[in-house]
Length: 326
Image (cartoon, rainbow, N blue to C red):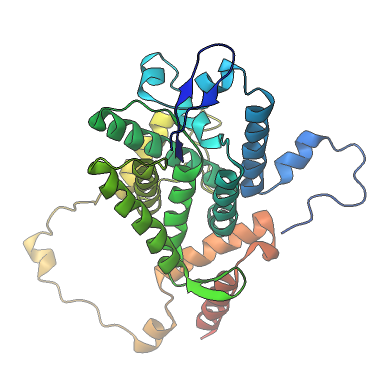
């Protein structure tokens, strides 16, 4: 994410120094570009959209459209441009800014998409964007500044944190040479922003939106820990609707997380001794959590094919099948 300033005098808008699958076979006749894009993984779709907006910045750099609709700040939000809470997260002006964000999106987004699916990766990207924008705008107001910002960093940070919480010990090869556990890379990524934000709070200037990065990280952590996925495989839509609206989704997410409080047992029921357990039968019983995980992976295979499983998921199914055979 970058914090930028612009001069609107004249026609020039100039920065003023502020710092598994084969998606197409040879038989491609009759397939449109839209079909090709729809078949891409979500990470690929997001990268392409970011590239298109990057090109738009350089093709229409004299237009106020990009300034008004692809950056977010408090003034724009007060003017009613609430869509900038999302559009800024697809917006880059500098090649290296774009490169690093898309690289981290590619590194971390694929693992998350393999588990959650395409639409949920889009969902966490957008949630991270809103969380990052809210945090950065609030910080700017606290500091008494009104600089607009742009970039996918908050969304990428949400994906990085969610993926790390899911696979903390998975190793990544940095530049193909340095094996690094995922949690170490994410921790370094976060520490840079923590120290950067601390310096900004003392009055130091920075072109990087550290508050926005950390806001995206918090949004990603909440999304993963509370399991706020709006799209769930194998679950029917509510009766009378094709899909649940946002209010229904929020209510359902809350109900999933509430603890059920059961009434106390009557005195005579509490006095009943538990029935004896057959050791042989108990040894054959499969843990309900294992059964639920197996069901989820089988639905994934049915929807996306065996090649969609990660090595960790394949190993889990092998262990589970051994337990079922006992």
